[in-house]
Image 1 (spheres, rainbow, N blue to C red):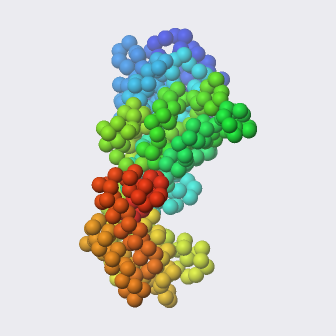
Image 2: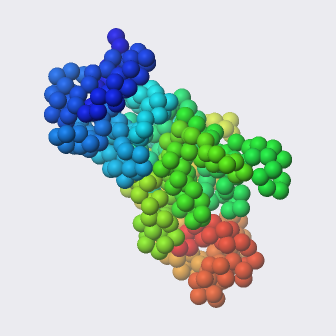
Image 3: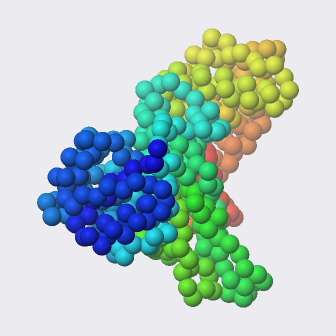
Length: 452
């Protein structure tokens, strides 16, 4: 049977244009001119898609979108907004709209929207490796799974928050795999890993001769995500000039490669993540408020490992199985004491730290089991000061103290960084100069060593 679509607009020309376009896509179209008749139609029969104007004689499109979230949640609804009405479009996405299209209507954009919406028919669930790797049965992780299923049905920008090492990129991949863009590319970008002077070219591409060294045309990362999902990891590290350009990409759905005078339309969904508090950065003035509201239309929080209960042991078994397979050895089992130690540990580095702990334990263990001595967890009572000078001193007691070489080196490095910060009154730029490393390297080491 043909898919069916409901068109809600009080302008006969728009209704006719949309109906003709849908019919050419082999989609049956029915039209309504106001909110009341649209509600009656939706209550009486099933539609595969709804397209509604924002301004209607007896209400607005937002009212209809909100009503549909309660009464017809299985029907994706897209809103038609006036040109440049970005605020209205964001409001529609927040209340549950699948996507939006601006007047004057671009039929190519409309066809893409309709095609994506129809892919949502049936049960939508993540597929591929990402779905297999989100391990756990705790209420906290079940809430994440439920949120993934919900946001995957929308094209709204999603901001994934959470501590370092919690698996934010994994969640982003699951959103991609559960949505209508699953057959398109998933392109992750670490915003903190690209040199500032190369960012614009890396993101948007460039044309031959645009600058010294541009010996040929280059396609940017945003374009490589065409038809799929662009994941901006550590988005808080974007410099202000790139924040302005990203804002335009989201609002206008177009990019301009370096050295090109015209803009190119793009069709990507944007997901972002950071372990930092974007709200605080906005208050400090280091992150644009308007961009914050564009990328944070929907927020999805990934819980830290310490809030996931017995998921720790499920994850540990999965990690050990994977590591043992790589090394070609039988999967060792965790003793009761090792399990209790893992369950009682707070994991400041979350899943990433658990993986590192188990990889080390697999190397140190003897036989087919891992005991509490093999996992070498940091004592829970250690605070920042102890992890600094005090513990560093203990780490230098010599090889006879039982501490592995890697731990001793980390403690020496931690002690040097703490002393440099104290010497410069916690001015990180000055501390980096004292240590003879870059500011970015210092920031990375501070995060890695848990000094802050």
